[in-house]
Length: 310
Image 1 (cartoon, rainbow, N blue to C red):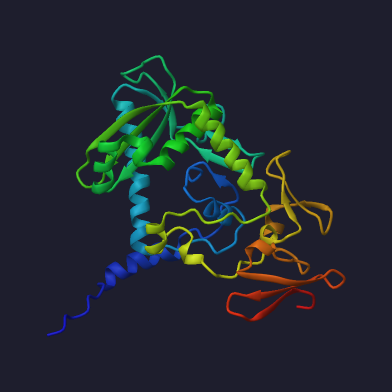
Image 2: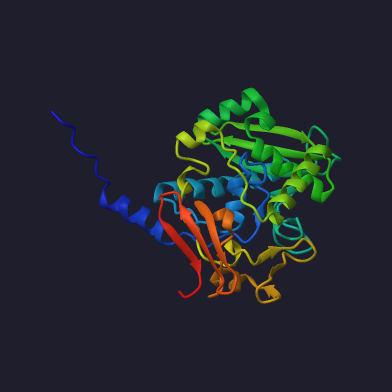
């Protein structure tokens, strides 16, 4: 006898539908410190250049994210109550501690900074809170943060380097049973330099990098896999005329019009947009400079012309 399909109760569907309808679908304008340690530079470059629409999450996933945010707030209270002098906002701005790098094109926000940590009370620590599922938490206990969660480790190295700190305090919670793990992480100057060089390379490169996602990731449909072979979106960041500069506050310029571009202009693009050839899933076969047209043979075998009369 075939199994009956599992249906979602109307009340649950309404809750998740609300979360889905109110989620933020805007693209991040900068390269985040929280992803700088990702294994695949193509994934980071694609997101920074707005090649594809922002990922849309289902209600259950959004609820998981919200649980993580609530746990962060709870951990702030718990750490302070334990006698650690934690500052979760910058006293100079009244907001989260913020860092910028790669000419302002990269950035991130610290969960806090603290002194009075029992293992080293006088040392100022960058503080990072994370939540984990049971399997992930157990892997963290076994391998420690550098090996188990390299993106978290890279995030803390970025914060320490930019804040001129020598230690970070990583506090993780197991969402299954409320177990808490704490680890002091030492600043690695070579790793920080590598990350800053990587960020500048991603920001300034006018060529889409090769995919370096693990094979098992691609087979599972993660990393670059969902966008494989898709046409990019039309905006200034996917245009061959645009350049990201390291000499100002996240400055972008357009060679076609000879001027700088604001964020809203970048989102919209213009009629003279021509795709960066490395973003097109096909081979460039001809260029018509006078009419500003580029011809491609796509992976499907079809001929496609970019530019000219639209």
